[in-house]
Length: 576
View 1 (spheres, one colour):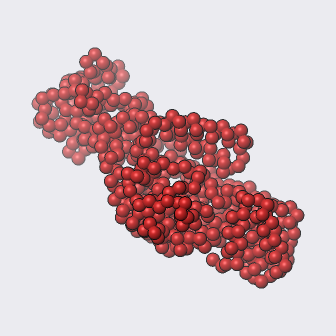
View 2 (cartoon, rainbow, N blue to C red):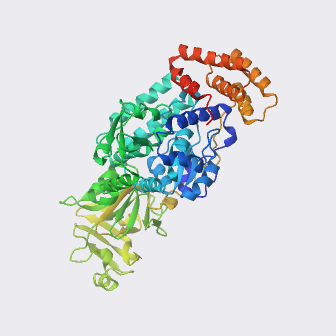
View 3 (cartoon, rainbow, N blue to C red):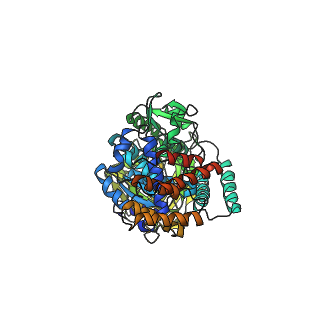
């Protein structure tokens, strides 16, 4: 897998695709869904989708090779990387911000062919990739990545994400007991009940869902599909014409107030007029996010998340860590912030030398605001103004902030970036607010962040490459693997016949059909594939009739298979 574009701190989410491990059944599932989608959606999908299928390295006959997708998507400013199921939202959006489509290596099981709550190859590759070849839509998705990766979720939402990830994996892998599945579902329900309010991460997640995943474009009377969830679902894509699915004009406020259930068909869909409307709506939403507002509101969101976030001072200094506390003044403006655990300092998204997590491994604290008696912010003071205030390297200094915070110690270094003071370092330093000790000289060196205000707060690290450097850089040892079964071997014989590589194909098909009848009386998909091959080559008409009869019987005896079989029979004579 080509991972040259994947930032090293995101590689821990990637895996090797191990293309040869896909079974013949996997390819048959892919082929069935793609044929159905092509037949159903050719007149319902946005033209960019049908045009982008081959352009993005997506073919009907076989599961995509992600290395091929990388090459095909490159001219459109995109690449692809295989991942293992659900990944955190911040990471997912950061992949997209870097022009990388995260593609889940797993493909849904045959029993989940219509829909799976877990992300899979069909959804990611067949749903998302083709339409990225449209320039304006590509711009929207990349912008969404840039903005989405900064959205702050609450701790409770992080907990629900982990519970949902565990639950969906149990459902798709099919190895768990009923008791284990029930317990996992219970955990999702219990943790979901703890969520109060709607965070900016939840709101932007809704915007993503109702556009990138389930969006329609055009007019209410004649909408076209561009959402990946619709483009990759055999059932839901064709349901957009149903009067039971309400079509609603795109409206940002309505969308972010509308929740969704990933396990059920969507009762309504939103229709935008064009992709430019999506871009404008996203920009409008971003204006209310913590990364645009900063201040107390932004810091409170970070504290509620209990996860890594970044606070940006007006000097440009970026403080990355788990922000766990702040002190505010009578006007509810922040005057001191604290982080818990490993913290790093950066400027312009680049970590400052000597100020990584190894230096600030036990947390970080610093005042916010102006010094008493100074008209200018501390970050804007000139060298002569610093000297006049007694802030000189090698000298004992006292800094008295308007907030009442006092910093006393010997200045060891004054750090500037782009002409602004971003950091003043002290030894033998104490920091206090009245009787409250904020830093004691016995704790070591004190690096004081400089800035009149906190102008931005966002999820994740300013310099992810440096902050997460201790994390596993790559998971290339983890590969996508699946076991081959005897039924897979039968599917492979028909696959070989279709590819023209089988000797005596009629004999091979006869033998496969006999074994299928004897050993696998309930397998419908291989019967459909056999009927298709026989019809297209005008071989063994009696066997074709027998396969059709078996399929009709299975359809009548199992209601869960009825639509699948009927949809297959409707197009089995068609060459796509």
